[in-house]
Image (cartoon, rainbow, N blue to C red):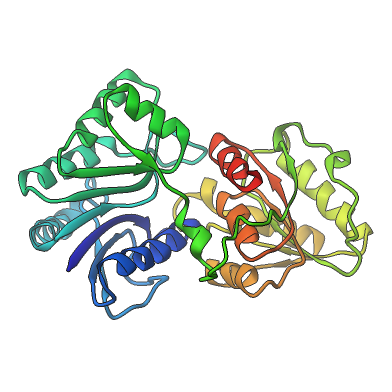
Amino acid sequence: MNISIFAAIGSQNLWDELIVKNEIKALREQYGKYTNFTVYSYDVSDPFIIDPYVKYVEYFPIWIKNPKNIFRNLKNFLTFLINTTLADLIVIWWGGIFFDNEGSSVSSPLNQWLFRTQLFKLFQKRVLFYGVWIHVTQEKNIEIIKKIFSYTKAEVTVRDNASHALLSKIGIDSKIILDPVFNDNNSKNSVLDESFLIKQINPQTFKISDLPSYDYSNKTVGIAFRKGYFENDILAISEIIEYLKNLWANIILIPNSVHPLDKESDDLYFLNNFAKQHNIEISENITKSYDIYKKRKIDICFAMRLHGIILAQVYKIPYMAFSYSKKTDEIIKIIKN
C-alpha cells in the first residue's frame, strides 16, 4: 500500500508535525504497519518524524517566481507526477489548508490545490480529505472550494462545524472527526473522560483579575502564547509573568511554532524577548517543547496555541485556555462536553 500525504510540515510548527505523526499512526492501523508513506514537506532535510516507511519529498511549486528555482521545480513536478501515479491513496491532511487569511504573513494557495486535485481526478485516484479546516468568505474562493471538493472518488472529513456547514451549503457531503493529536499519548482510555481545563479566558479582553485563585508556589508554569491576540501583547504577557513570579512560580516559555521565514508565526522569535526581559527559561525548538508536554515537565499551562490546549489535555496538565479564535473555541467545547 502506497499513500501520499500532502501536509503543511517543514516549517517547524509542533501542531503540523504532530498531526502527521498521529495521522500516519491512524492510517497504519487501517492499512497495515508496512504501509509506505510519501509525505510532502516544505523542508525535507530536517524531519520531525524519522521512520523507515516514511519518505519526504518537496512540494511543487517552491518559490516559483524565483527564476533560480526553475530546475528545482521541474524536478519536483516530475516527482509529484510519479508519486501520484504510484499512490493507492492520496491524503490531503488535517489543518487549515483552505482559507482566505489568518494571523500570519502567509496566504493560502487555493489555486495550487485546485491544480493538484484536478490532476488527482485525471489519474482517477482515491482521495481522502483528512479533517481539513475551511474558512473562506470571498465568493470567488467559495467557487474554487466547490471545484476542489467535487469529486466522486473523494472522502471528505473536516475538523469543525463551520467547515461542515460551508460544504453542505455548496452540496458537498462531509463528516466531522476529532483532532488526531488527542491520540498522541497512546492511552487506551479516552483523554476526554476528564477535563483539565481550569478556565477559558478571552485574550482580547484580558485583565489580570481574570486569572482564578491557584497555588503557584514552587510550581512550574508553561506559557504557550502566540503573537497578536492580546489587546497589547507586551503589557499583558509581562503582567502575567510578573504576577506568577510574585507568587513564587517557576516559568518556562513554550514556543509551539518556530517558523524560519514567517516572523508573525514564529513563537520563539516573539517569546524570546520576554525570556530576556524577565530572565526566565524558554524552550529552544519544537522537539524540546513537545518534550515539555509529553514528560509533564510543567504543573500548569497557560495555553493559547490550539495544540498547546490539546497537548495539555492529552497529558493531563491543568491549563488556562486563552482562546483567540473559533477553532480554539470549538476544541474547548469538545473538551468541556
